Amino acid sequence: MRKIILVIISVAILIQFVPVPRENPLSVPENEISVDAQTKSILERSCYNCHSNKTEWPAYSYVAPVSWFIVNHVSEGRKELNFSEWHNYSEKRKNKKIEEITEEINEDKMPLSSYLLLHSEAELSQEEKQIIKDGIKALSMTHQIQRD
Image (cartoon, rainbow, N blue to C red; front, side, top):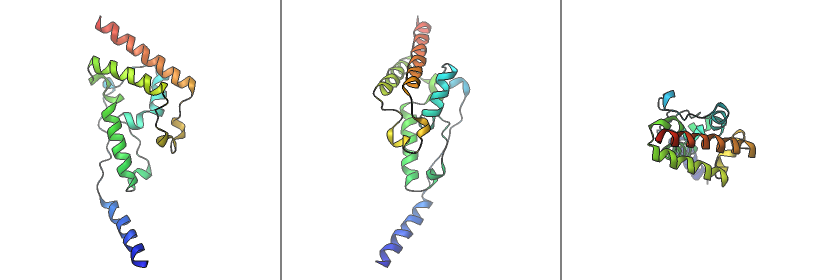
């Protein structure tokens, strides 16, 4: 039993040395999503940790194996939607993301419940969900005007 505990402790220590890239690529303000201040504030509080280049890496994100999960989650989130890269998206992709954001909010899929366990401040009230949907809808209208 003692050997098993020593092996477990040794493995737990050794995995701390596995490098995990926790980075925030440079954010160019001109590339960020352009929504009203109220919508932006809510997005920053509830979405930006996983969907922007402005992730705040908490202390536990430096402890393996939790760090592996978090880094992967942020990487996948940024790949799916990155508010810091919004103006680099094609009009077609922007419109698709606007639809998806509205759908995710309507279906209570975002923020993820697993994220909310440690980040209760990210939880969205019904009013905040409506503000985001309205802000995104206004953005959608802007894209349509620019295309016309």
